[in-house]
Length: 403
Image: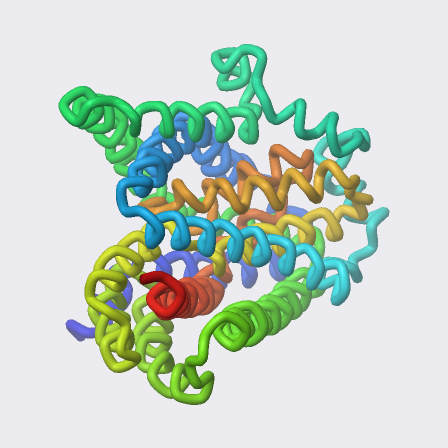
């Protein structure tokens, strides 16, 4: 009985139960579940409410730590380059796999547009590469925040974070303390909002299933399979490939040690909880303490390759559900947001807040967000496996290529 109560106390289990009950009710009531939609809409609006303040503070706090790594010399710069580069590649892999396997294709687009007429009208016009880059820079940061232009907010907050990192220690610590405190306050608000997530997901899953039918669930299963394949490719090609090209480390030996950390990551869904095991793995691989003690904790908070794959693959999936033809600027925007946004992801629970930001920035409807919430747990397990694998790879590579 105690074990059952403990299991039911987990938010992910509650959300899953809410989703299952919503699916059942959707099948029973069909289109009559429209009455429940406002409950789900309130949940989504609460998440949207915190996108700008949460991302602003978390990006500033995260980028100050990036700026401070200059003092760590070659190890610091190599580590940051590796994490940012692999996150960019992960974001690109997510887009490519979504376009190759098209997990969001299959629904009757006419029916979808009839059910969600307003949400399918927002499509951004295409723009050139340099126009997009220019549009990343806000002419008025306050206006960008008021209008929710997330990629401009990320650019400004990263720049500001780098500037804060150059201040004298006493001034820097005071400013970081303020933003860190605000960040913690916003995370508390998100956690409180998440208390109603089971109810919100229940209502939205009932509405989605009642209007779109079982096909939407089958497509979620296809999305998960495509995501798993993308994760395996990223680990095998990007991580193992980098070790093969840049070091003399035995890939077989590395994989034999790495699986211990991957198993813990898979079961806990937490890079921080896996950190002791990752340290042990690096010790077995003869990674120097001075390297692992810097690279691994930084990676546990900044390296989010698994999340980057997830964000872009889900964004394209959602666009495909609504029959949207994405432009170059939308693809590039998703990749850049997933890459830069990974800096501020630590401590932000669930998939919702940042995937909502990416969808909104690209003009993609948010109607599929409850489906992502309902199926998040297995995705989260694989996200963490990728993240931890990247941490161990980076520590090993940096140790072998720096003095």
